[in-house]
Image (tube, rainbow, N blue to C red; front, top):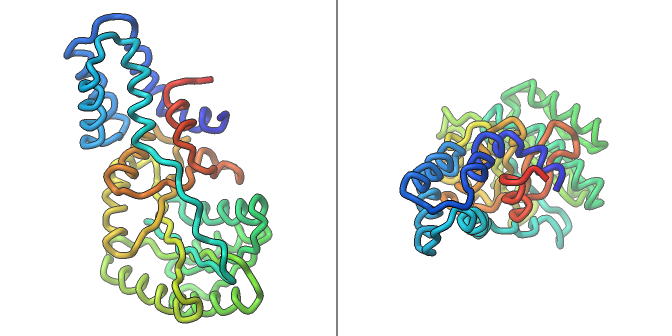
Length: 297
């Protein structure tokens, strides 16, 4: 639980801790309900999700502040779900496509995820530098590959991403790798081009490994709160996103946006980024997440 406590400190101190401090052993009044609603919205829980929480709490007929805090935690925990196991086993080669806008922490997340799968899950992992439009992204992925001892298939900046993915998929299959993780470009301002590119990548991947990609992970920057939800909606329109990774929660007071991912987007959160260290990408745990929003210990 320690890493969740540390990683969610800003959100806890800014909003959820204030809710806990506000609630004592007094009678509830309309002003208290309004204050709680405002703090949840400020924490980027989202207007719609906040409305659901308040409606459920008020329907329970709670009259004392002290009872409300217990019930609030219970209701918020009920909005989250334990993520399903990633669909990257049980076949010769599993392929994961990772999408997200530039600056979301996508490439760093791929490096940390490769480390987890390689060291904790004992999988043979290969990376593909499919964001060929940014030379920095290619170099960054190569650096992560060296750091976590995982091979990276890359080409020159400006190369055709679909051709790169074809080569990487063929190489991963021929060399007996278990998982291929593909980085992609994140240029939302050119939606049509990106959609076309993602469709090509999916097609060439499926040509070599039928049914792939088996997972499409969307990386969202936790510091951008509800703005990240708008980006997510656009990606969902382009490609069949299967799950979400929320990054930079340790740098954000907007940790409430995780509730909106589940409720507004109806997508599971598989991992959360709670620090800059290589081991700070952790499996999402709803119970610990909610507890850490309210408690320091």
